[in-house]
Image (cartoon, rainbow, N blue to C red):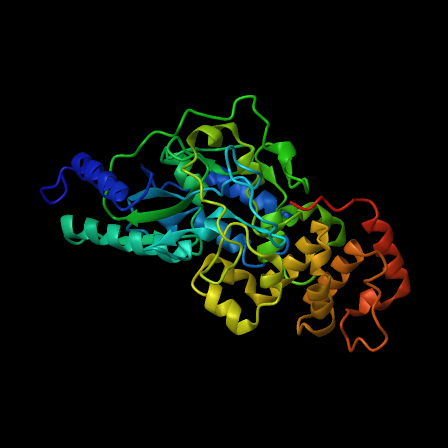
Length: 406
């Protein structure tokens, strides 16, 4: 009993409250150190699979894997999974009326289109707000109770906590897979000083299924349950700064923020995923959309980017990061109508990585068009200015043909 409150009853009511707030799955785990997961994370750092993310440090892993050591008052940790809608497949839908030709469209990972209160929101903010509300709910029922929430940036091993709490299991594509919504969930945790009964880990698993592994075009899924983040399209389009490695650009396809391919390949998601987002309009004037107009996004100013994507997950790329990604996607699109926009970006964009990506894209759409003009005024990076590098780039670009336009 806790101040007259039955722990089992409190846990049941807490789960019910979390579901009322929109969480699809909730479980409770102990705060014992996550030793196995700590070793896995440290191995990923040692093997260079987290290279390019300087914030993912040994210090962070050690701290995240021992919450009790950081918060001696903690007794239980509540794992929370909020569902989000995947995007409707890009191809024609059965019975759909043919639509007129549209501009070249890219793809945003579905979670970037999450809405709260009818407007697009950053999931960090939405989940943090719900966690604060749930913490207040606990403190009202247990006088003197302490809570602390984590949403990505709070240093907790989200998937490890969720697995221990029975919320789901980690699939071969490294995503957490739940019974309620497949892997289309966003994770958060609520640490509490209240000693609550814990849940058993899920006995489920992927079995012999390997459908996700060949779905990754860049080969980031190096083996079941192991990802090389430096090759992951989500990393390349969100976390990576500067030019994207040339050999990976044709493999990125039309993704400009994140990637859902390994989730889309998962048979469990075919059965468990929430109802799909509509393909919707191409314009991002009202915020993130699953299939945005690539030229429109390439040409956004800093002010326009902030107005459209401020307060959403897409803001993490910055204007230049999104423009760079759109230039690469246009190079892969085969859409000749993008030539004028790419030429302007090559010649006038203030960011060197965007100029270089536009130059590369022009070379994909019209071989030879990417050769810099003498009066280009610095529209190319130094390494691209060397003729040997240009020839090497052309040879490498010839390996993969651009996909047909959608």
